[in-house]
Length: 176
Image 1 (cartoon, helix red, strand yellow):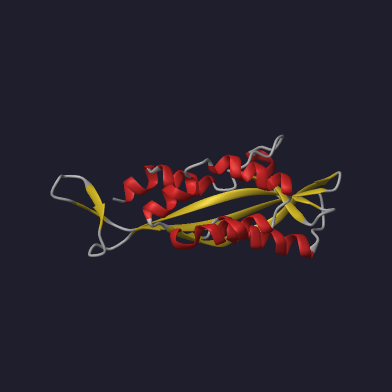
Image 2 (tube, rainbow, N blue to C red; image 1 turned 180 degrees about the vertical axis):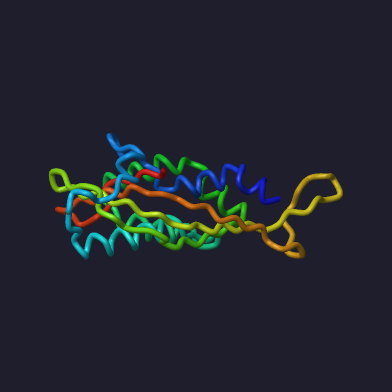
């Protein structure tokens, strides 16, 4: 069943929630560390921590509130991009799955660079995704059951989070 969770469109959508492309950045920038001696603003670090936790923590029973929490940390342009990345059926699919997730920061946020009023941070989050177990019905189809133990999977997610320093809000995120 764990294999099914990893391959499901719900899990892919969860892992990509907020996975809006941050143009011009690659993994090399993210893992290169902070050799430039840049100093991160403590308020921006706190914003990135809050955002990384929010974008990797959700519950199917309160997904609308979870999305609102994520969007409250971003710019208006971020909201548009985020909703486009989620797709039209993300919320309904997640609610139907009964899945939940909890994110815990394991590294960072580390400032990568500052350009023209935009600070870019790298952060790594362990995201534990849980889904109700499924049992086969008489018709041979899978159906959720409360009798079986939920399935769980931990996914390590790297994020490049772009902060608009004028608005003190997230303007973009790239899931690595």
